[in-house]
Amino acid sequence: MNFFQYKKNELYAEDVPVKKLVEEFGSPLYIYSHKTLLRHLNAYKDAFSSTKHVVCFAMKSNSNSAVLNLFAKNGGGADVVSGGELFRALKSGVPSEKIVYAGVGKTEEEIRYALKNKIMMFNVESENELREMDRIAGLMKTKAPIALRINPDVDAKTHAYISTGMKKHKFGIPIENGLEHYKLANSLRNIEVVGIHKHIGSQLTKASPFVDALKKILVLVDTLKDNNIFIKYLDLGGGLGITYSNETPPEPADLAKKILPLLKRRDLTIVLEPGRSIVGNSGILVTKTLYLKKGEKKEFFIVDAGMNDLMRPSLYDAYHHIQPVVKNRRESVIADVVGPICESGDFLARGRKLQKVKQGELLAVMSAGAYGFSMSSNYNSRPRAAEVIVKGSKYALIRKRETYNDLLRGEIIPEII
Ligand code: LLP
Image (spheres, rainbow, N blue to C red):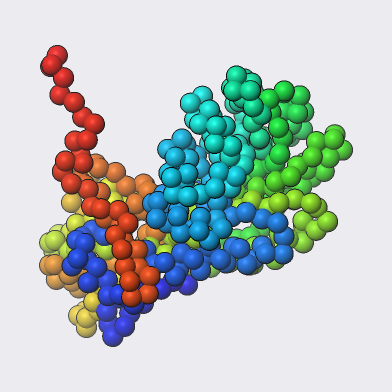
């Protein structure tokens, strides 16, 4: 459910015509719906309201500070994976005690930064990282609150690049080594064991892998208890999928219904790390048609957004629905929607049945709120797009379009050349 709907054949973001926003802010343009963002955050809060919980938004999916600020104001925390994300979260008003920090390669500088800011916990991914954290916390005369990220060896049944919970993946500690790692953690003077973490992958469209993974994790939690190691936070990770085309993923409430009965009579605070399921369908990318080109085999719609603006189709062959901003009655054609970048992999859609467009007309690339702008780049020296948020009939710029000068920021032409 989102609030990008047609009114008399014209696409609106809530109560504002998309066309009007492009006229004011240019193209390509990311547009987010305030109402959809909040609706999705609240869907998690409501689903888990019967138990102690924190929704730590996975900000890798969308790290705009206005989006983070909106979530923070509504009780959300953040799941961060770098010092940069931690900086953004803190600057955007996310309380440090609602921040969890994951990732297989945290640097000493990043660990120090997070310890200084007293985050909720680190999700530690290896023995070496644990020992390093103990050393650094010792030097800082503090204790590092940690969860171990456990790899439960469950197949998330999603795209290979975004599946993380199996033995062959770099993530987490194999579940069979969990007890021994927790014993080690418990014995380290500057480590405080507070939680357990798992995240098995992204864009999951079934609840069963979540349930299977959780069951395995709970067996470990019980074993830990038998060994006098007590867990306060159970971090279930993120990964709930969204509808890009015809997927029917569970809603947060469906997930809660399956998960909460397994947690009865356990005094645990649930941590959730959703990203895509909150922001994915809350955002669109609008792009202008530059040229139409009839190839020998097919038609090309050449648009002003490229793989640098939205990388998912090129990287994962991901499907994003594309629709005209103003509907017309023209016939449909089979076309590739491609960007201006000098690579054949620069496409937003291939072999897609689309209504014919004319030069200058706008297309909306749907479900682009997650891993859209946050994965964008300056490849081909293209300034990154602007971002706008709409709330009812109001709207505001939340990131300026980059300029050519922004492209050169930080670059130096030294004397030695
Ligand atoms: N927690 C951890 C530890 C994660 O690694 C991730 C995503 C999440 C939470 C949030 O997962 P979500 O709820 O968004 O599925 N760029 C890819 C997705 C990469 C996901 C990486 N980790 C894409 O565009 O599909």
